[in-house]
Amino acid sequence: MNENDTDNEPEEQVRKNQDIKPWRLYITGIITGILLATIAVFVGDILNLHPFSRTSAADSIYDLTKTLEMYIDRYYWKADTSDEEFVNMAGKGMVSALGDPFSLYMTREELMRSREKNSGDYIGIGASIAENTQSHRKYVTRIESGWPADKAGLKVGDEIIALDGEDVAKMSVDDMVVIIRGDNKTTEHVLTIIRRDTMPAEVSSGSAADEEEGVKMDITVVTESIVNTSITSKMLENKIGYIKISTFDRETPKQFTSAISELTKSGAKAFIMDVRNNGGGVLTAVVSMLNRLLPEGTILTETRKGEKDVIYRSDSKESLDMPMVVLINAGSASASEVFAGVLQDRDKAELVGETSYGKGIVQSIFPLSDDQGGIRLTTGEYLLPTGRCIHGVGLTPDREVAFSGTEEDLATDRDEQMRAAIDLLAGKWG
Image 1: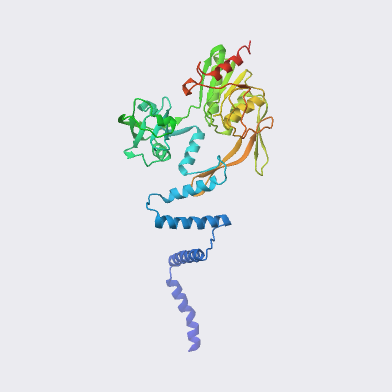
Image 2: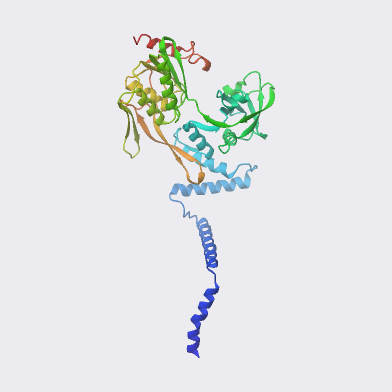
């Protein structure tokens, strides 16, 4: 009897196991895993253990943010700040602790705008919007000729008070840009603006001010795929070709080469390159443009932490064998200083104007996982062909000339720096 019971026991167990479906075991395993993980995190929290942290700094940040969140939740009298805003500001604060004004944490929207700026083309309306830091009013500060904002009748100085019927008072400029650019398709937007007879003082001064009433109106704008115009050119007196470089993006070399070709065909015997108020851009664009101007030789050396130096060189395929002057000022920074400094070091051009900004560092953008934005860090420095670094020093012009006019006077007969460049080039060709 006992032997039979023992022999029958395994058969019973097999039958019971066959009654348990595989998917039930799978779900049971998942639930058990979740419960165990939750218990582990809960116990770790009680014991002040952070199993996912890798450094003491990460542990301290975790403890601090948890404490701050507790106080804010319990005592702060408003509750209009989103979790995303807290995360973004925490990221910005951490990077700002480096004490480097050129390194920063970027939100998803800021990373997107940075990429679009460097690419040279984007979906948009061809207008720049700025927010007054005191009044938080939003104004149109620039209109690109021939693009949607211009065709719709938008003007510099217009105050935007609503976007597609939504009050923009609590929107950031980044929020507005994201809405306007949408999902990279042609989209219609209605901008509600206030237009005044005179441009509000606070647009340029940065101070909040009382303003005249103005006229309220709706302007419908349809987005387009816009190619940024970073190069403008014209022929000056004495067969001098003038090329204004406003930024260095991926479209700039193509526009630059076209401008040189057209001016040369029109009889240009010398060139003025204007990088005043050019804040920089993409290094590859600068290298490409310098390669078009220079004979074979060193363009730039890039040094990075723990890495072998990268040396950029010009080849012997083409160069511009004509007298040249580059206009610079305190607004010439980064890539524009590389452009002007290399031409100066290679004895290809003389610099006219005022000492440049002084930014000669390598910056790299690292996108973060899970669409959390990105981080821009200073990762090295640039050395010009003679080995000099301009960071914190700037470029000293060969001929220092002050500019006393307004923005509208640039590249006109009222531009002292332009006049000095023309005089310097006069008689340098036969």
